[in-house]
Image (cartoon, rainbow, N blue to C red; front, side, top):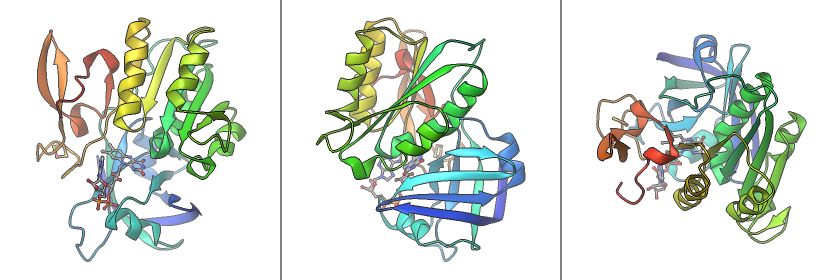
Length: 263
Ligand SMILES: Cc1cc2nc3c(=O)[nH]c(=O)nc-3n(C[C@H](O)[C@H](O)[C@H](O)COP(=O)(O)OP(=O)(O)OC[C@H]3O[C@@H](n4cnc5c(N)ncnc54)[C@H](O)[C@@H]3O)c2cc1C
Ligand code: FES
């Protein structure tokens, strides 16, 4: 874990409520893996006091990217940052997606909803580098809620878009699109990040088909590195439920480990 108190912002892009910040942090970029996250101080003045967790959207060449949706005061302050300003960042944190074994020629399907698409770009690039055939299911309420579909396309990550109102791509939930595609064949593994109901539904689809799935959970976090116990979730181990810290033991867990609806 690194602490960079002066990570310079190199680029900022915005699409309505969604924003991307690329910043310089060579040590963190060298260590980062897909599915890990950073904790960013959004206001050096101290309000909000707590850092905010954001998934690593991409990393490489001494730079990191975060992609986020404004949710409240912290993310609104981050969205107001400009190129040339600096960020105070801790990371990389947590246990990310596991990409064990050979992936050459194997199909990997990534399923993201809304801001949950953020960590799937870095993951998709990593899987593609291992020779996997990557397809990305990207869902949002409207076309405006899937602003980086073209970025996935440009990286050869084959996005299949679903919008609730049908303004872009498939009309309906991303889980409905996934269900339709699963009727024609299954990948080796699913990788999922998004709102809880979407992740729970996807986990159920995977489990009922005996399909491995890795799910990236979210929680409101105090510290991000195991000190406060603010982020616990019920996880199944040895047939029993245990409280596990999402920041330290996750955020990524296997679908069959997660006990939904108990925190
Ligand atoms: C490991 C991890 C990775 C994340 N990665 C991303 C990312 O890549 N992009 C992105 O846009 N967001 C991501 N989030 C969510 C992001 O951290 C929150 O949206 C942010 O902390 C909200 O801060 P705020 O001060 O803007 O809003 P607040 O004022 O703190 O909260 C606004 C509203 O959002 C709710 N909320 C806050 N944090 C969470 C949370 N973690 N889960 C569910 N509801 C929450 C609050 O209860 C409140 O209703 C991630 C969260 C975690 C735990
Ligand atoms: S956020 Fe503090 S223990 Fe997880």
